[in-house]
Length: 187
Image (cartoon, rainbow, N blue to C red; front, side, top):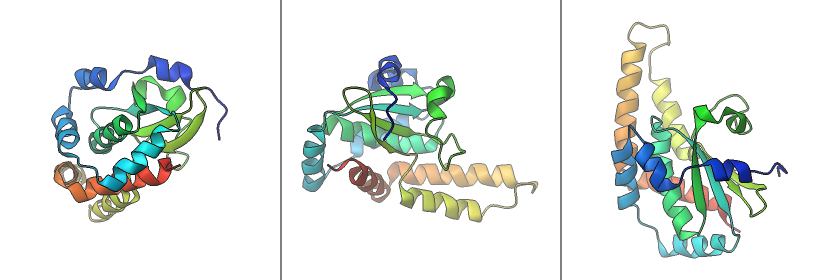
């Protein structure tokens, strides 16, 4: 586990309400997922146990990100149930922290959720998406034309818009996020 204190990053971050107010895009998707999300009794039992860990969280995110539009409201609801206060930092304004949590050691993929203890020590990291969502993204990318094809950008945009519409409305996708976060945070 990291011994770097994250308290200064936490203090710098926005609350969820401030983050929503700051958002320029995808706010409706975030609000929709947040409002429609339902936890099972098993989920609630786990969140009650997680609350005993006295965690806080730092979220590296951006409003343009499809993964963030899915994961931020779900993890925010988990945090509320688990008595975890989250603070939100915009990725491109906080690269010093972001670069400590690169996906596969190279990618600034977001959102990244850094869970810390009261002393500011990192205890868990989750993100940018559940393995099932990553598999869906990999499948979509495999069906796109080569990057140098004339229609690549157009087809990529269409594919990602369809994908984002799907994940914004499909509770079975939300469940993969819940289960993945649950596996990470379970005491």
